[in-house]
Amino acid sequence: MTFIDPETSASGRARRRRAYRSVKSSATISALLFDWDGTIVDSAQLGLNAYQRAFAELDFVFSQEIYEASYSPNWYQTYEALGLPPEKWARADYLWRFHYDNETPSIIEGAAEALLSLHDKGYRLGVVTSGNDDRVSREAKQFGLDNLFDVFVCHEHITRRKPDPEGLQIALARLARRPEECAYVGDAPEDIEMGKQANILTVGVRSNYPSNARLLSLAPDIYLESLTELSNYFSGVGKPE
Image 1: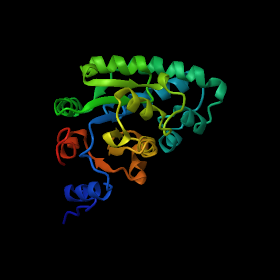
Image 2 (image 1 turned 90 degrees about the vertical axis):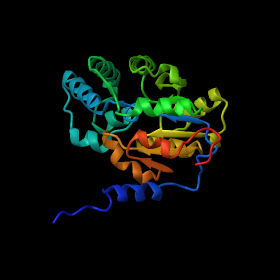
Image 3 (image 1 turned 120 degrees about the vertical axis):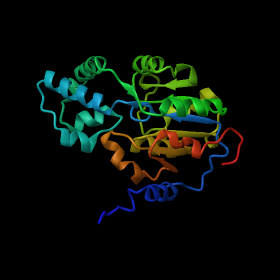
Image 4 (image 1 turned 90 degrees about the horizontal axis):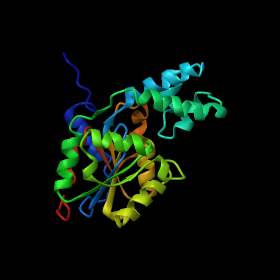
């Protein structure tokens, strides 16, 4: 006899998506903002590889258990949890970028098609990420996505890190949109918390990053197993759900 967990079955996932949807409506949305790593780019393993190689060069013990428990888009929190002294953080940043840049990232399956569909439906698209501007811009061009986005807000453009809503507020100002006209899609708990602080619709999506296991605890307004499900909620600007 085969046992099917009701929470991991297709119907269970559908119930879970409904359970985490709030009274907010997507009908007023005209702009969609996205996190980058884990949401659009499948970079979880590459990021882990870069951490491991950077710590090896620093001759510092890297604990994967602590990494998985403490991973955050604010990587200084991760450094601190791993016990790396602050005086080594700048060197760790350099080494992480060096090793990551020698990797070949890939786009998450179905992400490009989902973004193009949303763009064609009239939504203005943007990126709000903790990633560095040069890397994110390079990857956007690599995947042929750069012309789909009207705004990029990256690490260099903010003074306060996620979950502070500064990045989203900058993007809203650049797009001339009110909070009720925007949604934010991300894979980390900090993404959902940031969206809630900015008072915009939050969309959580499954990813391979360790922090994703904690995402549902933040109760995103919408939860997706894949970006391809976005069309179920965003049918076009000015159209009913």
